[in-house]
Image (cartoon, rainbow, N blue to C red; front, side, top):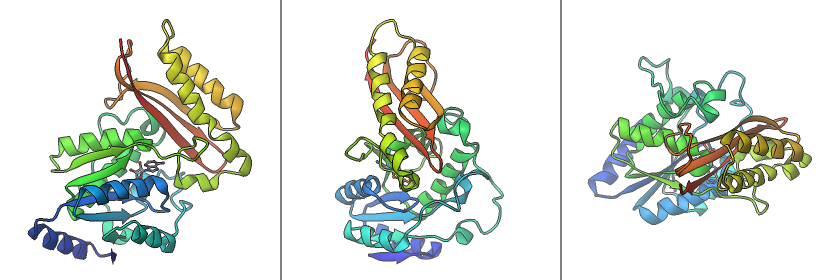
Length: 283
Ligand code: AMP
């Protein structure tokens, strides 16, 4: 496995591989790798000649009061896991190379970002699309792999690829969970023992909500309230949001049919956890 820090070395490597007609699968991450990331790498490994993964904790997508400094990092362990998973190139750019000065041209997400995490994390998705536009140019993947755990991110990346004509196929994979249902996340290490025991109730609450939505004469307001109550009665977490929207448009709809998402974000003492279920409703 080759480790590349330099942006120009990354570009040069990609150009050489492209000349030979090799296809590139790309898995962008913020590191502290777990099975959720590794599943994306397995899929990319399988479907492409080369597998490039990146590790970059992107300051632009963290708000001033968020956990950029505290975000968990373990470079050595990440290198070991990536190597074991057959990554060909691990791209580890430095912040000062990615953002040598403030940008002259800024990207702003106009749709799909005024709900869910975009509402409580102002500017988050602007930071996400900015770093991804840069990474997509540097890595030039044929396919890019994302997890549905961050379903809003997938919806926004889908729009980025469409709006800006990136010749990239977006691949979105299912959420990898712990045995008790908790979505795997780098931030789970910041849960206390009690919080870790309670956290699987978020997924259980979403399942309950999904079941209720498929019943007749139940309003989405009612289901959102019930799901929120389910979470607050089983955990000490504080609800950021519980919402039900069309997917991937992320719009409010009166009559639910087609693909919808039920999603929640919950603050624990040192970690904010998100989870969702995407499913089809027949009218
Ligand atoms: P992150 O390092 O948290 O930015 O995540 C990098 C990629 O891994 C994103 O596309 C995430 O959606 C994906 N990912 C993170 N956790 C999971 C999970 N539990 N299951 C599937 N994909 C995940």
